[in-house]
Image (cartoon, each protein chain N blue to C red):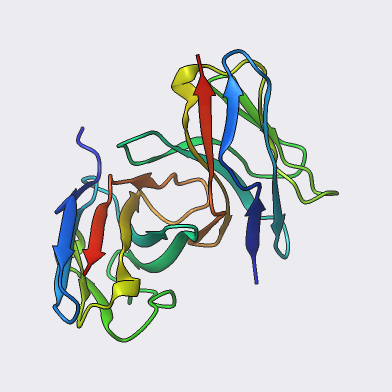
Length: 110
Length: 115
């Protein structure tokens, strides 16, 4: 069945460092791909999405490109901030259901 | 407008007791979803409702779990005879519809602890 695999955390970086969180998926066809973020004490929020191959989703300085050939949707940010500390979930949407990865906790040190 | 709300925010119960978790979706959203977030397991789909259609219960882990949605709005997730492995954060989400373009908006969750 469909699945999402993302790098395990926690990931700890210093402020202004470059961030990559790897995500790969297994699915038939071409599902929509998402990154969700969960800030401390808050609910899940959609961070960015891509609905077809080679699309690039971007928001708040984060980017991810839908790579069909490598079935990947890695999340990147050029310069992280302390306020980016959160748990990040990679996900795919198949019809009416969203299948999530296990989440990656990110700590940014000032 | 208001987002998705859930109550209670925290629930501690004894093993074997029944619990009810409530979700109030965003007004006008026809689709409502329940997920479970267990430590180290990510988010697991449980059930979803779309309008007046029969719910998709394919994700419910056992027959101790059930959910209903009254009047196409508020939903209640019921867990009977709770077990320790039911301890998790239960998340509710709603969306305008079920199109792949319809974003799901999540509530803050209910943290359930079974002792």
